Image (cartoon, rainbow, N blue to C red; front, side):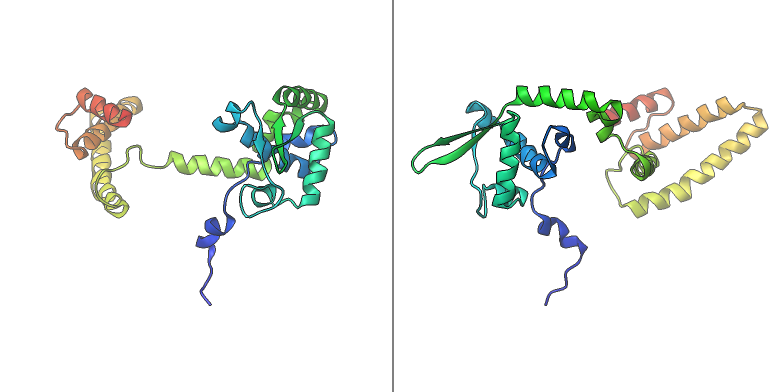
Length: 229
């Protein structure tokens, strides 16, 4: 038997369902109903469905193009979800064709009205905005991620490996910074002046790395043009 590891998870998981937790605030709508509505809302926004005035077809079961394959909901769960959504006027259904098929449409105006009322009744802490803002551990994780991003190199190198770049920074940049510090001490530069000089040297180094022989202000402009492309 082949070894299964975490790298195979994306292939095993398949497609992703966009779940909107705010739908659970709708009257009488459970998590199951919110899952069903989230998937229906996704299809409502596709160009093909919009050309049909919001109507789309889905079968209950099947390997593809069915509620079961896309949401994992059983036929019974689908019926309960449809009933709760139809009761509040959010889901519209129509039987068409031979053999007859059930077509669906989301009444987006009604959905927006009910959702606004529900979130307003629940107060600002339960608003749609608060649901997407991280709290507690999630907020800490987000802060750690942003902190990691802030420590990444400003410009992505076009050639060479990460190891080469790290080696280059270690062997070239540190002596330059130390030398600049000694120079600042001997010449009596202020911290602001030292920071400006170090920043200029950094800009010169980046410009040189990208094949430019410019220094000073032209090097800064060269770096800015590189970042914009």
